[in-house]
Length: 316
Image 1 (cartoon, rainbow, N blue to C red):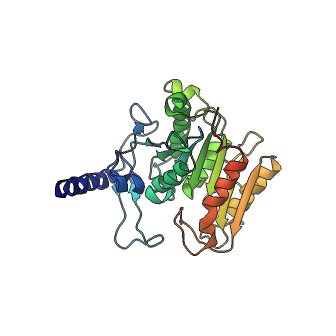
Image 2 (image 1 turned 90 degrees about the vertical axis):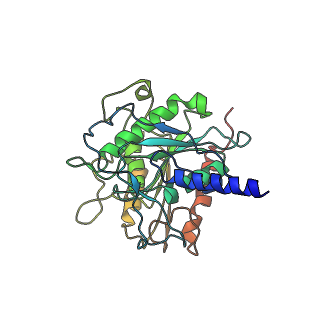
Image 3 (image 1 turned 135 degrees about the vertical axis):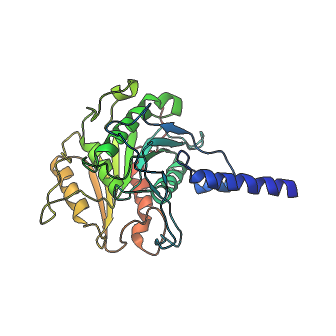
């Protein structure tokens, strides 16, 4: 028994160390079980488009002075120059065939990789949904729009998911995107772009559709601009082809709630099916961690929305 306990501690320590390494992300449940890291897929075969120099060493930039969320720290991953996908699959007995590309937030400066990434994957897996966590490039590249490199990464990721759909047990017609804060903006921009790539095509993955089949936008940033904050930015061209969208935000968010309100209004005008939930309190950056605020129950509403859209039924 002592030998087993010692080996278990070693395995657990190794997993915790791996969680902070550039290429590997692991959910809390995986750490608890001592299971193997989730598969990681590099987005690009070489240097990502438009990049020339590394922003520095990729690492967790969280300091002891940074605030906690629901009493726990979070990973603030910075200096990402090697974007990747991390695949989290539900048990075969629960798999529905639906997949979601998860885009953590962080103001396009860092990525909240556990709070808005691996913890989201864990919840999606419990719903029978395959989660694909996107580690996109941050911080903002010099002399480029803040969303340009992340959008290239998201489009490439959607193509890779659909290219590998058969191998990963995914229905290519049921691939959504879910993002928080800046990741919410990235999800909306990806939804508003057609399937034309914003970079020179690389291989077969870039022949696949890059627009998601549905979108989930949580406390989004950058969805409005102008003096009054009532105009959508030019990268958000909502049309009838924009996919059905679920939005949630708190009215006291430090990011103006108009981000969700005016994007919802644009969806409504384009006759895109959309559902908006606005709460009085909750602030920003709560992820899926439950607190006393009702807004943190939004994952239950999302599950009901997905079930109503038959996204949680097993693909035939």
